[in-house]
Length: 167
Ligand SMILES: [Zn+2]
Image (cartoon, rainbow, N blue to C red):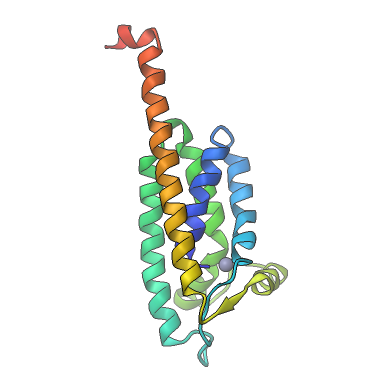
């Protein structure tokens, strides 16, 4: 699955575990394998493991994923931010193998982890629709959850008696 989709699912996980950043990271990490079980896009690999088509998609996805991570960190309320960042990083972590391999020439994960990551994949050339649908649904749900969280934070601040002293 695109790393952007892992990041978007991380926002929800972080919000659900907003008081527990360590748990959010662990659940985010585990969610990567679950999300990779959803049928998704993949293309035939080139000689060195990556085709031009794959690299083009990976570059766009990498940039979009970084933007989603920045947006996720910015839009959630302050209280949830550490857990949301932890969950997004955890959810995206396993996909560091591709940039590490491509730019640095090594895979940072132990062989059993790599095998598991490869084994869970359900890729096909027709999986792009699922990628886009997953991304659209999660982006929408993330936005709703983040906006509600911010609203709650504002209401909390207004009903806080100390808010008058601070004002
Ligand atoms: Zn993956």
